[in-house]
Image (cartoon, rainbow, N blue to C red; front, side, top):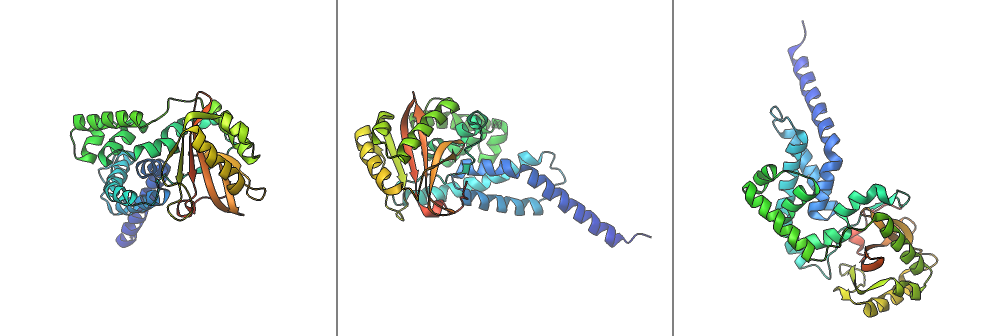
Length: 306
């Protein structure tokens, strides 16, 4: 006669394995949601760990759609974090930029077009202007195509209120300088030429590729020397580029083309295997309209050599 205790233990094991498999199947998606909401790789990983613990202990009997259920859990965890994160960022030394994510520059620019549009450094920086509720509604609806009927209970709002939050966020993002859609191949071409000129110290070419209203953003976090406010205008950005090409870039610290948050960018190394800084760009009409320089080592430690 079968041992009922053994049968019960087997059932528990099977359930745990099924729960782990379901979570793992959605982990990449959930990480994308968390990163877009928080702009921090480390914070997104913490949220995923917390979501996994909650998923393990939850009564999953009536869960018919693990992705929807887990998206709700992750969004609520992020929503709770956004308020405190906003206060921390207001006290941050200098301009706060998101933690960059790198991938292989050999990937086709066309293949990462959607990713770049959704999670570019420029987009994440602009989204810092949004309230937590606006950001959650905007990311879930506009990026991940979640319906307002599903978003509403997550934010404890009505579907119509959730719709208004997303609409208001959309207007604020556009007003905050989000660029028009750029062909990823064109973006790649411009950035490749720009970084090649920077690596070669060709200041004349760099200046010719700057939009007159270009903006230089830098994040040193008070740890590394960097401008603490955005610098506007080609003449002033040119001065920064001159310093950058003579101090940050050197034969033993070359610029390495890579994909930064799905778009063409560059990285340089302070030592073998240790990222010294990351460059991201906004491009419009064949010119560089914004440069994002991320050199805070506390935001670069998660990066691996590409």
